[in-house]
Length: 139
Length: 482
Image (cartoon, each protein chain N blue to C red):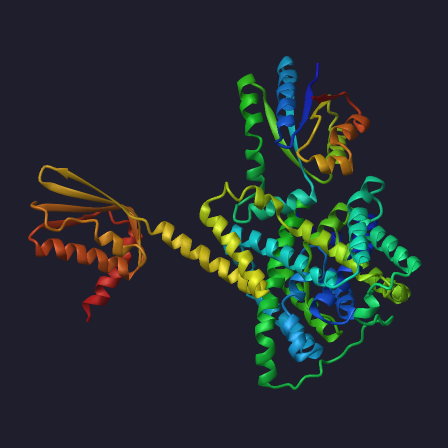
C-alpha cells in the first residue's frame, strides 16, 4: 500500500521507535522501499565538523548513528537507503517528501533538544502540517 | 560534492543572498564594535575592517556563502600591540598578516590543517569562547546594578524573541529595545560613544605611519605570524562547516589567499586584521545565504547603516553589547565536548584541556594551538612507541617476534626485552610485524645481533619488510665507510 516510506531520524530514542514503525510499514508491501532522512542544519554541521575534524568524511559518523535502523531493517528484510539533507529539519523533510512523491512520512514526536523545540517549534508538527501525504507521528 | 562555478557563486541565489546579507550586516555591527573595544581601538577600526573584509572576500574568497569580518579571535591577539605601539603598528601588522596568508595559499598549505588534531581544534574553539566571555566581565566591574539588568534583558530578548518571530535577527531586536530603554530612562550608563568615536565617513586609503625599518618589522612580525595562523585556522574551520552545511566543496588554498588579500586591503583602509566567523556564517546559511553576493551585501549594508545611523549607534549601552558577546561566547563554545569529555580517550581530553588552559593563561590562541599540537604529538609518539616482543621456544631455537614501530623513542625499552645469556644455540629475530624507521632502530637491531653473537649464539634476522630492509641497506653502507 505504501510504496515509498520516508523515515526522518536524528539518532535519538524517539527516532528509534519511529524507525520500528517505519520498518513494519515497509515490510507489509512486497516492493516497498524505505528512505531514511537525516537532516543536517548549520548548527549541527558546526559541532559535527569540529568533532570529526580528522575524519575522512563527516557523513561516516552520521551513518554510524543509523546503526540501530540498519540492524532493524536487516532483521525485517527491508531495503533501505540513507539520505543526508541539508537545511532546517522541518522544511527540508517536507520539501523532500513532496518532491519525491512519498506515500507516507514517519517521524518521532520529539527530537534531541527540548529547549530548541520550545524556541523553534517541533519538527513533527511542521511536517504534519505541510507534507502532501499521510504523516505518522510516533510517540 | 561539487564546487560552484564563479558566476554560479555570484548569481545562483540572488534573492536568498540579498536577504541573508542584510541580516548578517545587522548582526555584524554589535560584534565589530565589541571586538574593537576588546582590542582597545576605536569602534571604527572594527567597522571599517568588517566592511572591507566582507566586500573583498566576496570577490576573492574560496568559500562562497562564508562571512568574514573583524573577529574576536584576532582582536584578542593584538591587545598588547595596541597598548604598547598604537594603531599604526596594528595596521602594518594587518598588512603583513595578509602577505603571510597569501604565501600560505600559494604554497598550498591548507591540506596540512588536517594535521591539527581534533582535540586541539575543539580546544581552540572553547578557549576562544572563554576569552570572549571573560573580556566582557570588565564591563561589569564597579558598575551600578542597572548594568546587570540591561545585560540580562539583552540575553532574554536574544533567546526568547525567536519564539515570536524568526525573520528579524533577535540580537538586533535586543540592541534596539535595550538602547531605546536606556535612552528613554536616561540611566547615564556607559555607551559605545564613551569608548570611542563613530565617524560617519567611508574609509580612506592610507599608508600606515610607521618607520619602515627592521625594528618595526621585528615588532610586528610575531603578531603577524600569530594572526596569520589563527586567522587561517578559524577561516578554514568555518569553510569546512559551510562546505558541510551546504553540501558543496570549496577551495581552501584560494580561501587562504583571499583572506590574505582582504587583510592587506583592510590594513591600507584603516581596519584591523580579521578572518572568517563561525557564528556569522551559520547565521548567513540559516538565513538562506549561499553565494558571494551575501558577503558583498553584508559589507555594503553595514557601511551604509554606520554612515546613516552612526549617531544612534554611539548611544548603544555597553551592557547591551556585553549581552550580545555573552551570547556569542555561549554559541561559540562546543558544549558537546563537555558532555563527551569522559568518553573520549584520556590523552585527547588532556590535550583539549591543556590547549584551553594555555590560551586562558597566555591570552594567545596561537600559543595554545602550538601547545596542543606539541602535546598531542608527544602522546602520539609515546603511544606508537610501545613495542611488544613475543618469545617462543621451538626445539633449541628461541624465536622473538617483534610487533610495533622501531624508532628513536621505542628502541631503549625494546633492547631490554631479550635474554642474551640464555643457554641456547640459535635465535631468530622475526621483524615481520614491525617496521624500522630510522638509524636508531638500525643501530638497535645491530646491537642485538652483536650481543647474541658475543655470547656465542647464532642469530638470524627475518621478515624485514621492503622499506625496512632498504633503510638497513642504506645505513649499513654508510656506517661501513667509517
